[in-house]
Amino acid sequence: MQLYAMLDGDFNPPAFVQHRLIKEFAEHRGYTMGFYGVEDPRYRNGSPYLCAKLPHIMEHYRGVIFYSIFQLDGDALAMIKAVHQSGLTCLFALQGLEVQDLRPGNELYMLLSGLTSSRNRKSTLNFKGLAESN
Image (tube, rainbow, N blue to C red):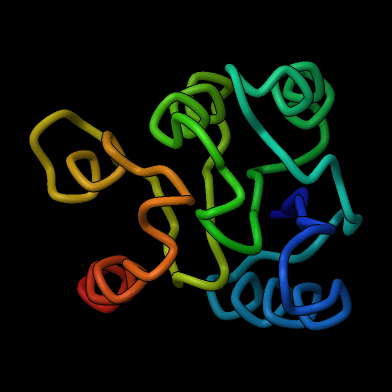
């Protein structure tokens, strides 16, 4: 089961470190990597870049893996829903999250519904705690 990786060129650490963490997390979850690359660093306003690629990604990959949830610099919930509606799983290597079930009312849904990177960059402990419970 291959994943499509979306790194952030504006994010620290550098791309090779992001690649390594993504690969290790994907393998730990039983996936292999089908594509690596530094993609458009901002996924805002409905993520036109990601949404335009989803039909191609669906044909060749099982899911999309991001380096960090904070790449989704706007409505993170909408981005994850777009990925799920395409039949793909959504993963975040830095936070150790594989989002398979995202329903109103669950803790992850509530956290994501208000997520913006400018406000919550330091809130990764919330996500790490959720990852440990999965």
